[in-house]
Length: 158
Image (tube, rainbow, N blue to C red; front, side):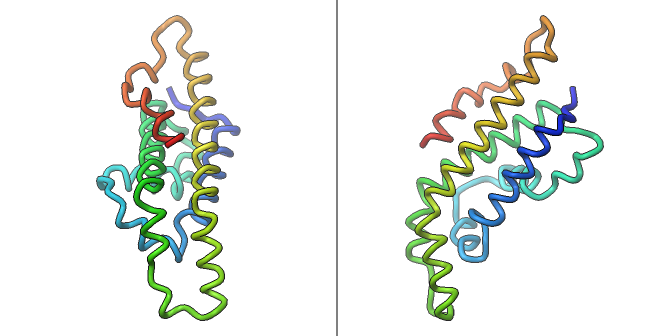
């Protein structure tokens, strides 16, 4: 089944916007690239945050969307564990005074911004499961085929 719900598109676009502006920006990208995540996870994060237009007409397949949600949740867990300390000790030598202030704001708000991202991903997951259950109509919903989704709460809460 493919999801073409405007509410889901809106949620995904909001996640992408928040991720690009508050999580993975010019001040954090270097530190985040050091996170221990496999290439498939990074590719799925890119799919979720930067390529939503590709899905505008065809929709998201449920199994694919659950994979994207899991990838973002794994990123959030890794960023909480490894990212915060890496950000604090990043280089500020080549930054002018204004950029230092911006960098400090990004670093100081990183944990809060991760929490906002985690909440957004959770809301998306809840909405997708709701659609999945409605569409299943007596059959087993697609999310039951993803045992890793049982870890989603742990990934998002930390």
